[in-house]
Amino acid sequence: MSKIVSAAADFLYPFVMIFGFYIVLHGHLTPGGGFQGGAVIATGVALMFAAHRYRDIAPIFKKAIFNTCETVGLVLFIGLAFAGLFYGKSFMYNWLARIPGLFGEQVSYGVNPGSLDTGGIIPLLNIAVGLEVLGALSLVIYYLLTYVVQMGVNKHHGQ
Amino acid sequence: MDLAIQVLILSGLILTGLLVFYLQDLLHSAIAFAAFSFLMSVEFYILQAPDVAIAEAGIGAGLTTAILIKAVRSTTRREFDR
Image (cartoon, rainbow over all chains, first blue to last red; front, side):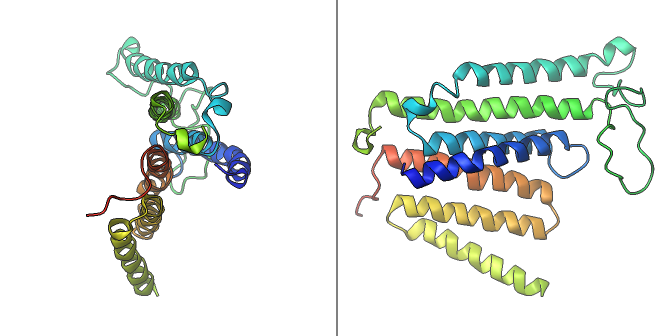
């Protein structure tokens, strides 16, 4: 697209990504969560894909990155869910809650003070879902664009 | 005040929905769909569903618009005459 669109997309891209990761990490405290944050991150990737030419953007956003994100997210989610069985409890038991360390702080009653270090495995599940959604939605965009370029149907637009 | 905002947003939803249908230039139609999705997101936020509002703003206004613009650029821009 035009130089104005490319420059504006380059300027907006870090803010979109930081907002997406903020939504993923604060999923157990504020509205949003893994799916919404992953969708926002994938929107940033789609913005870069829409604003730049394919041969400029393809070496940066590789397919292997999105594939790795999707696989790691799925394996992390399944592993965290099955880890409850090893504690002698049920599937998806919150085995990290109330254990000091990673996300183990106990929540006080009443209004949530906004401590990020709570929730047990719920923040980790949010991160896993966020990785999965960011990988999957970015792969959708990637395959659409690769198909368009391979078919050569947009030769009128100088790509 | 609240009622006025609701009426404004809902009439804007109807207007942008009709624009999506009646505009002949498909790029304009995609932008009208983005405006429709943004108004829908604001309506969700006013109805106290910020979770759905974030999903609608991210997917409806962002991702779908990018996909539609890519599709319009790789096919014809004008709708065929009926």
